[in-house]
Length: 156
Image (cartoon, rainbow, N blue to C red):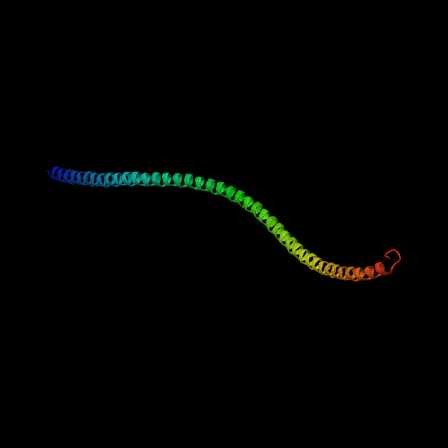
């Protein structure tokens, strides 16, 4: 009977060990199940965040491409505006040089006019003086002519 009691005790201890082992395995399974669930949630959240980052990256890339294109367009417009400004500057420089030349010509013409006017005034004064002298001579000749006319044979 001792053998049966010992066998029964041993069977009970083994049963308790198996029950403990099963309980331990269920507990570990529950823990692993929670860990897997947590890892799944973590994976989904990470995936969502990565998709959000990827979407943001794509939007940023497209925005960067648009900005680069706008920069190229604006650079072209700036070059065109600079060319126009340079052409306008050249035209302004030509106009300024023409204006300076015209102003110099006007000054030279004014100087010539003043010179010609002074020469004219000198010649006019000279001619007026000659005219006055000729008028005097004419008056003097008139008296001489009168005298000659009176004393000449033809006058008698």
